[in-house]
Amino acid sequence: MEPTDHLEVVKKRKKKIPTEVSIFLVLVGIAILFEILGWIVRGDSFLMNPQRLLIMILQMSIIGIIAIGVTQVIITGGIDLSSGSVLALTAMVTASLAQQSEYARAVYPALTNMPWVIPLAAGLIVGALAGLINGALIAFAVIPPFIATLGMMVSARGVARAYTDGQPVSMLTDQFTWIGSGANPVIIFLAVAVLFHIALKYTRYGKYTYAIGANPQAARVSGINVRRHLIMVYAIAGLLAGLAGVVASARAGTGQAGMGLMYELDAIAAAVIGGTSLAGGVGRIAGTVIGALILGVMLSGFTFLGVDAYYQDIVKGAIIVAAVVVDQYRQRRRLKAA
Image 1 (cartoon, rainbow, N blue to C red):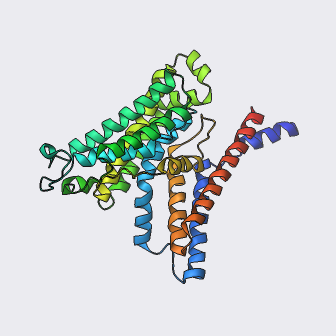
Image 2 (image 1 turned 90 degrees about the horizontal axis):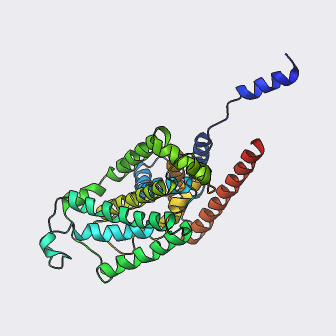
Image 3 (image 1 turned 180 degrees about the vertical axis):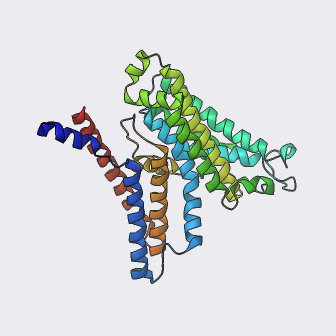
């Protein structure tokens, strides 16, 4: 065998470390760093506090639900800036249909003490409709995803404020608030993650999503109805933002127009940190889940150390930029390999 042939065989045998494993190692490294700093600065353990870890995971579960939808949008080569505002709108609508009859200022006095399924369905429908509008504007009006979803971000937040003239919606039924109690938000997040991991990896939906992100023209030539699929992807992203709004209002026991502020950026950050390429065609739900956990560990760790919120935002921004730089480096390597 020639030396060059031997080298080629060796290269083929080398197994590339999955991106998710690398990202998980980063998560472990950040957690260990905060553990060390905890003992140095506070004289206390960061990781050995179950209550702190539970709160951290609960905080990120709602953003994680949004991030799963945003990940699919980014894989198609798009972006969704509206998810935080859609969450607020769905939270308001959902809460207004989940109020107790004893509350004298109910939004709909004739629709109080409703079964929990009705406000849940209403929230999902509102979210899906917002996503459908985004998808239709992008697919048929050929409006860039950034502009279309930016318009929805502003409009949905405005509708959420106008829905009750800026007043919060309170006194929700125990049956409904159970959705957001205990570890239920985490269970919902993980269930959604598993569902769409399977959908992206093993179904035609996933194949079409990756194909459109990699090369829309080639996908169209191969027989994929790109417009219809894009509408479906954005509708699913809106549906998941609606689900996040349901969980958020149930967990807080109220609906407020200010809910979900900047959540869309956290969701995009979780996806990008998790290895989803802003160029499209690359990304996995498992990576997004780990990316959301990284954001959660950072938020909880900085709070634990008493770091000011302004500095937390600076560090978060730096990590997002670093993740994009790494993504660009990977893209250049793929182009060279091709």
